[in-house]
Image (cartoon, rainbow, N blue to C red; front, side, top):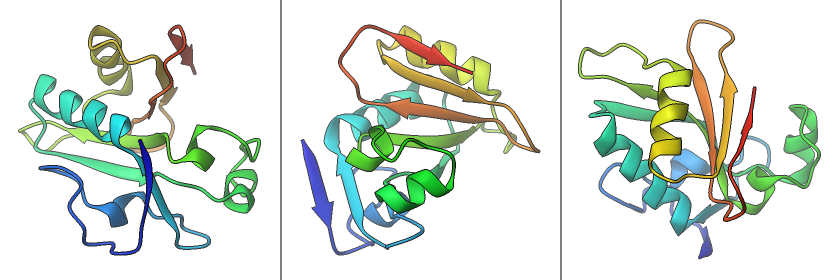
Length: 133
């Protein structure tokens, strides 16, 4: 279920708060509860020390500004770009995170291995598995 939030400090689960998914352009927050469930499953499977959400909900304008179509899963509150960290405090490689996500039955997976950290796109689509990157 996709829900809008006004309180950025509202706890969505054991490890995530609403504000982590806030649009960097308009400040609105929309999050799919299925997505949160997937992120919690990844947290446990990978024994993460933390998961940083670099991009959650995006308004159409912001999505287009970062190279999206303006109508993707981020604009629905159904996607997050994340960086997972191990117990050693180091980022877990995006390919490893993507394989763990696939093992969990997550269907929307994308790789972004540029820069100093490896980010992984996770979305809550129910259609057949699809990888990007």
